[in-house]
Length: 317
Image 1: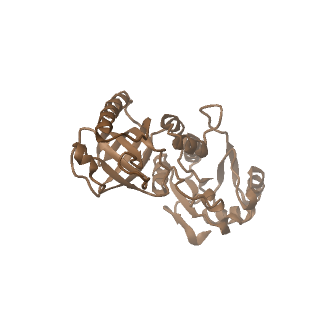
Image 2: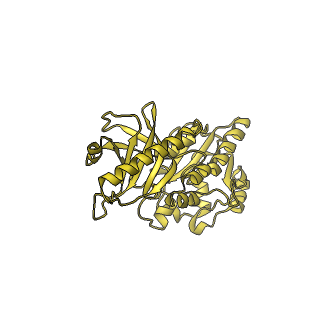
Image 3: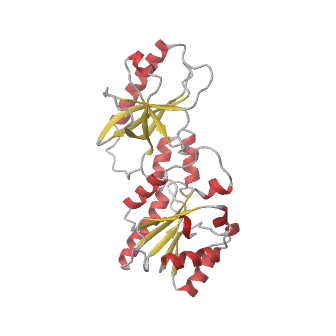
């Protein structure tokens, strides 16, 4: 475990309270667990540590291909930090780590960060064949001298909030429902790169984003979003897809953002999109004229959606 770890505060873990999980997306369920950890560790006069993994265990164990992550490692750490956590320990997840027994994993981790209390999610399992559960943790806790607490599931609907459910919603374009479970708008950050400059033909510039290939994007379609560029925020129409009106054969999926009331060159800058609502699916039009009529409708609808959107107080993502 030790050679492949990353610890942002290696000397701040004596007697720490800790939690363990993948925490992809840092959704409302994750936030409840982490906020409980921070609150109760402070009451006990202890520091707080979140132990997490990269790559995601599912990506390694199931050899999952293609975009999967709700948050990049940097986004995940930023959100966790914003919740008041003192230390984030990221373990490099490998088949070797997965094959460690639950007993061995906890003993190694305990020798490393000497946690005095361990908070876990209600469904937390770990170790080879997922043999580790609260009973094993409790038995080891009596031997090693730490307490264990299981946190009840957080639910907004009939089902507990989960990263897998949020992925399903995003892939279906159900952005508002996904945002409800995340507790903030779903986002994607990327560098603005040169596209085919087709938007200039219609006097409508678009910013093409180069986004981490492992980042899960909403399904093809047009979205109302906020674009954050530096300290500025703009209402934005985002198109995700392969531009079937202009290309007979599907091309690589692109992310194009048209910032409303904005007309500047911003190549190579970093921009973050925060998705609010899907406007419509991707569609092939008869030509540029029909497309422009639709774009004007998309812009008007986006203004209506985002003007009514309450001022965001969401966590960074």
